[in-house]
Image (cartoon, rainbow, N blue to C red; front, side):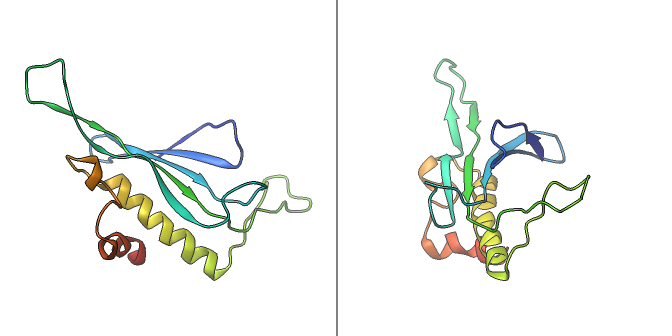
Length: 139
């Protein structure tokens, strides 16, 4: 996992890589805290599906892979600053329900990130509803 610097302190971008060979798996944006005008529920949004891309300029049958980009949007308790602390800028204390929601949506994000399909309409959570919910319930 590589944390990518962002202009926003509210949205974090993480790029994920395979441990074995360092090849990229995809990107997840985390938008976890409430703010004015933001979507009011928790959700996983696919920004870009992972899928096989055919190289149009080459006569060979080799294919590149379009990496998935997903956004995890939640509205969990915002961090608060500790009085007198010089090392910690803030801690978020989540309710049990918020932790369940965060892990549930993270399960969908991981499903999208690890999915390797030929066709984008079959990528990640674009499947039968009972299968889509399986990984998120296991998290």
